[in-house]
Length: 201
Image 1 (cartoon, helix red, strand yellow):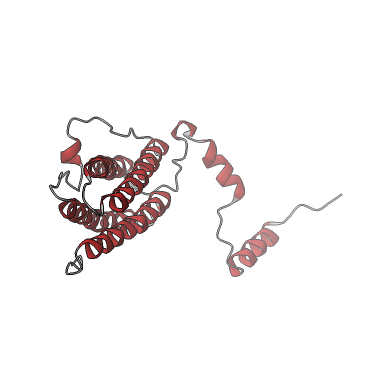
Image 2: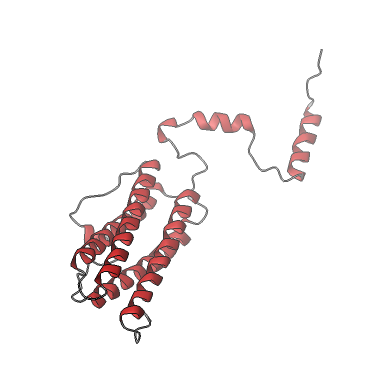
């Protein structure tokens, strides 16, 4: 008959695990906690952020992305001039990227038990960036660059706010931030293409 582990041998095992850098909680405890509050889905005891506040912040990011989609869409259809085709194609690509970001943010909001706010009423006030139509092609590019720079600043703040309290949301915003930086660089390059005296500064 096999001997049961004594408290002393169990303690030795735990110490050995700790020495090897083993960091997981006791498996039985993980299983017990997983069965608690299962209606909260992905939100477990390890979630340290204020869920309502995170949803509010993410809904502001969602509004920012939707406004960017609308602005890029207008610029795509209103682009005219000798450089219109190449610039319009860039606008269209960015609009698709921003729509993907909006969808990803909305999905994350639902994962943490919130509701994505798609209500057009108040959309502009929830958004960090502005909807500016722009008159000329250069105006449109400038306004898109300004909007991207606003998104870069605000998303960096959101990432710092999330820290290690909501790692999944933080990673998502880091990925979106990286894409917004690409967009800003694209707009800067377009400015220089249309007018070499413009450096996007």
